[in-house]
Length: 123
Image 1 (tube, rainbow, N blue to C red):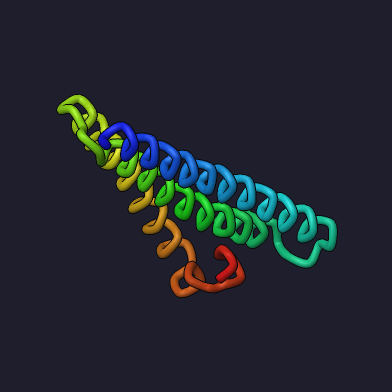
Image 2: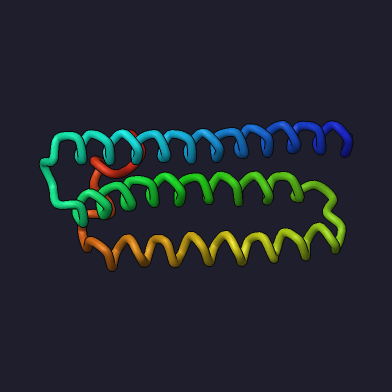
């Protein structure tokens, strides 16, 4: 039974990691398209373009970090060893720290704009 649960957890974790990779890819493509269209149209100042591109990509990275952390939790949820728990704790601290500081930068960079649907993933 434990082997079946581990196999299911591995597949769920793989799916969450796939979603994480897709989020980063979508964020990168979105950021590149925004940068090219803004610079080609010369409709904005370069600093504002950089801010919008960064904010757009940052939101997708935060989204990807959440899925990556979820994948790690699922992967080690079934009969973990102490080594697995230690590795998960280290990964969780690093990813949570990255997520926290990235969200804090988003809020500091443009208060109130970080939550807009324009720069975030589709809802």
